[in-house]
Structure formats: structure tokens, C-alpha cells
Image 1: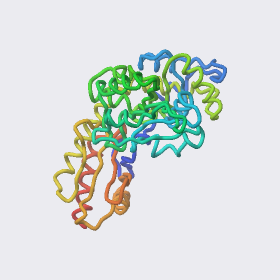
Image 2: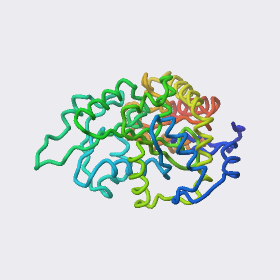
Image 3: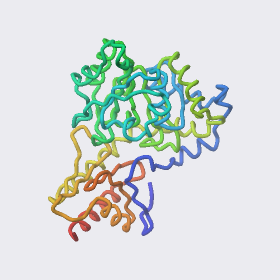
Image 4: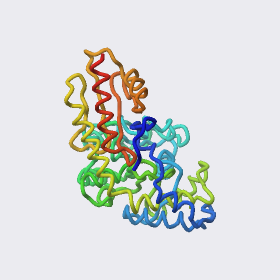
Length: 353
């Protein structure tokens, strides 16, 4: 993958930092393109066909980002003044700039996320509004799989089926923010379709663990995607000769899914290596995938910001998520030597406190 040298950067901040593989660069350079807004880019059309088939949906739409994909889904499913139920730690609630409210005029009703990333069915049911002129209409349930802030954990097919059944019983739409849905599928050894079968829509990112440089895909019924295409245009997401980047997405789906298991193994290795120091706690839950959250004991004066800075001096990049906690994410461009070097560096920095 890469040669180790004194200037080599170990970037564990996120799997969004992944660069395209040589096979992707080759595919991009030879991509056949057209105007996608006119529906005439054959490479984009092919990516959308492959994506819809993988998710078991009728149609798909290529968009610039996962944030836009989630926003488009909410715009199609909901009207202004209507309400979306989602977890209090959901990416859409915390990290998408309040787009559903600012641009869609929608309300968000948050429910407590459990340790495993789920929301209790009873809590979801309690959040559904009665038919009352004084209250906003509940219109949509949104799940995140894998769940970022709960530790990169996956939700099971059984759980998502239960949420889908609950949504259908109450006449609600059901959207899955599947930015890392392929991590969830690979970790459980299941076909990704089993994780989204009951959903009305699902989005997944090509530019995270799958290594493509740009883009996400939104999948659903043909009528849903027809409306989503209009919303994409309204948001300025209509791309022209987008086959250049869609070509990398096709390679991502063909070549990069199964190898996500390597990222999970390296995350386990990272967590295990750090657990030997009682001054820190490396969280890697039984249903985790490619993320490790490290907490520093209150008995030691170093903060997360200070640890991030000291690791950066050693060419190791991580992200602080709380005063005493950092996040590390494994991906294609992280190998075993990177993991071992990171473990050693953290032990040395903590020991010097």
C-alpha cells in the first residue's frame, strides 16, 4: 500500500481522508461521460444501476455528499412543519448543519441512543405524535448504520426490520443513513440488502471506507428517486460530466467492499494494544467496526487536545471528540505498521504525563 518513511503521515482522523486507489484513477481517466442533468452520462447511470441493485431498491441517485443525500431524503419524505424522529447522537442531528430545519423547515424529535446505537422501540413509539391540530405531524423515522458517535457500531437486520415494521404500522416513512452501511454488512457477514429491506430510502457514502474521492448514492423507489432528482437540482447538486468521479464509485463497489474486514481487524488490534495501559480506556464494542474511541483517565492531566497535538508532532493525526476523548478510524491507507506505531506513541505520551 505505501512505503514507510520519516515523512509518512498516519491519518486516523476519519475514513473520509482516503485517497482513490490506482484502479480508481485509471477508471476515472478513461471514463465515458455525458451530461448527467440530462440523464446522459453512461457512467453515472451505470453506478446508479449497480447501487440500486446492491440495495435491493428500484432506483438510485448519485449526489455529491452524504449530507446532501440525507437532506434530499428528508425533503422528499416530509413537508415543512412536519417532524422526523432520530437518535440524539445521529449524524443528521449533530453534524449536518441543521439542514433539515434550515432548508426543509422540518422539526427534529430526538430519542435517546442506546449503547449499541439503537433506539428503543418503545421510545420511538412514544415519540410518534397523535393526530392533533396542535402538534406537528410525525412523518419519518431515521436510523444511522453504522452509528458514528455510538462507536462505529452496527445495527442488525432484525432490529432494522422491527423499526421498519413500526414505521409501516404508523404510516411513517423510514430512511436509513447508511454512510457506512457496507461496514455494517461486512462485520455481520450479511448481504447489505438485509439491512435495508424495510426502508423506504437509504444512502451510502462512496468516499469513506470505499475510498472513492467524492460522492454518495441515495436509493429508493422509482417515484421517490424522481422526486429526489428534483430536490438535488434545487440544492445545486446537479453535476454535469460526473462520470469522471462516478467511475471511481463503480470500482469502489466492485473492489473495496469485502476488504473492509481488514479495517475492522486493525481497529480491534488498535484497541487491544491500547488496553494494556490502565490510564486509558480504548472502547471497541462487540458490534463495532472501524472506529476506536480512547478515553483518558481523569487522574492524568493531559487533555484530548494536548494528546492530539503531541501525536501530530509524531506525524500521527487523530481527532478529539470530548475534553478527555479522541476518535481513531481505520481505513484502506492504514496498515499494521501504522497501528503498531500509533499504539507505541500513545503509550509513550501517556507515560510521560
